[in-house]
Amino acid sequence: MTQRVTVRATPFFCMVSMLLSQAAALASAQPQRPPPPPPGLSPDRVAAVTTFLRPTSSGAVLVRDVWSPRGRDGRRTCEVTLQRYDARMAPVGRPQSIYRGSPVRAGIAVKGDAVLIAMINGSATPFVKVAFVPERGAPRTVTVTRPGGGAARGFTPSSVVAADNPEGFTVLWQEEPSDAQGRGAASYMVSFGPDGALRGAARAVGVPWALGALAWNGHGYHLAAFYDGSDRGQTRICLVTLTREGTPEQHPWWAAPPDDPSDLQMAQSAAGMVVLYRGGADGSHVYSFVSTAIGQWGREPAHPPELGTVDATEPVGLRLDAQGAAQLVSLPARPPRG
Image 1 (cartoon, rainbow, N blue to C red):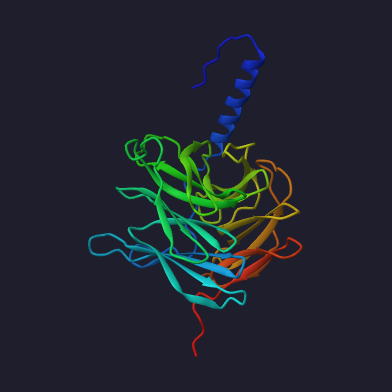
Image 2 (cartoon, rainbow, N blue to C red):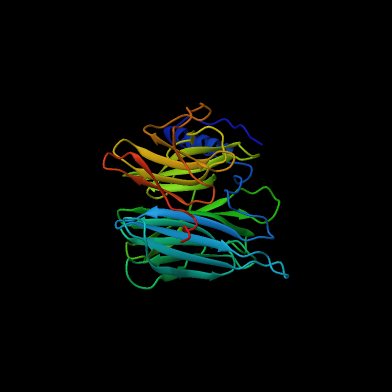
C-alpha cells in the first residue's frame, strides 16, 4: 500500500524520491518464476547434465555438472569435472574432478587459461563453494560465507553466474525464500583475485532478476537476466548494466524476443557487448547479437541472426575473432567411434 504525505520538496527529498521510484520499477520487473530448464535437464528418474564450453588462451575448457538419477532414498549425487582442449579442440590429458557430493548448480569464468567455477547448493544444508583451477596444478576450493545467516532466514541458493575482470573474478549468486510468504529473491556478490584468492566478504546487491550471464564491460558489468518464463517459448533475455560494486544503473531492457534461451554467454568487444545463446523449441539454434546502447523496457527487439545450428546435446561456446565478431565454438558431446 502506498501512503501519501505532504513534504517540502528539498533537493535531498527529490533524490530519495527518485531512488525509491527506481527501486519500485526494478522490483516490478522481477520474474514470477525462473526460466524453463535448459535442454538436457532431465526428469528425476534419469541423469541430468549441464555443460559449459568456454575458450581459453590456449584452446578451450569444458566443465560438466553431472547429476545422477535419484536413488531409492530419493537423493541425487553430483560430480563436476573440467576437461581442457588445445587450439585444435583436441583433449589435453584427462578430465579433472572438481567436486563430488550433493547436487550443485554452477557458473564459470575464464581468465587466460585459469578457470573459476562457482557452485551453489540449495538443499537442507545449503552452501556456496568456489573452485579455482590454475593452468597447471590442482584445483583449490573455498566455501563462501553467506551474508546475513541465509539459512536462518529461510533462504537457499538458487542460481549463480561468474565473470572475469581486471582485478580477477566476480561471482554473483541469488537466493530464494524457501517459504510462501511472498518475499523477493536476495542476491550477493563476492570478489576473487587472479589467483583465486577470496577478496573480502560477500555483500548484498540489489539484483532481483533471474540470473542469466555476467560479463565485464570496461567500467562495470553487463548482466543478462531472464524475464517471464511462465511457459515454454515465453522467456526473454533482458540486459542491465551494473557498477563494479553490483548496483543496477538503470531499468533492464528487452534484448531478445521470447524464446527458450539457454547456454547464455557474453563477451565485450570494441563494438559493444556480444551476446550468444541457444534457442528454439529443441535448443538446436544458436543466436548472437551485439548490444551497443541502453535499450528500453517493453520495446520489442529485432530477432537476432542465427550463428549456426547444433545438436541439442552439443556444448557450445562464444569466441570473438580478430574483428570482435562472434564465433561459435562447438564440441561434439560424444567423440566419434573408430
